[in-house]
Length: 199
Image (tube, rainbow, N blue to C red; front, side, top):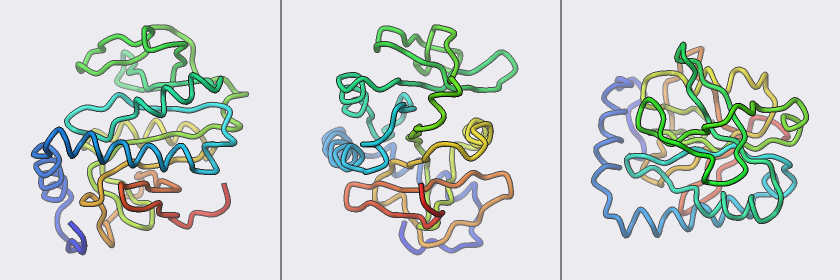
């Protein structure tokens, strides 16, 4: 997907990326996810984090299980998105994978009621999925906008890191004013500093 035309519709880009990702062989998804997570665990911003926000992968998204295992072993506070009754999402803490239950959209989310604490906002790293990213940190998600709203509620606290396969990276992605950028992007081949300032 490198060099995708910048004025191509977001819908067309989204559909092309989703189709490509859905067609991934399980072995490639597993192997590339392992490489991506290894780089995530070596990221300096992760190493100094107090708390970690993860996501439950669906439709061949990059796995996060190795990051979860490492964070649990090393005493970090772990959060996952949880959808509220009015389709507003927030980050809620879990103590183990057993605290995750299938939510309204068939995605595992916290079944408890422990929202992100003010203290945990201070050294927070948030790993997010996406369908298309560019090297400036722009992100194209599934189209609902709820991840953008979730990240907006962090009020610029925390380091946002996109996890994606190399084919999901384009040189330039047209962004909307409400889109929330990532500070770093990790693929199986590289770690991209998106140049959004010190974190």
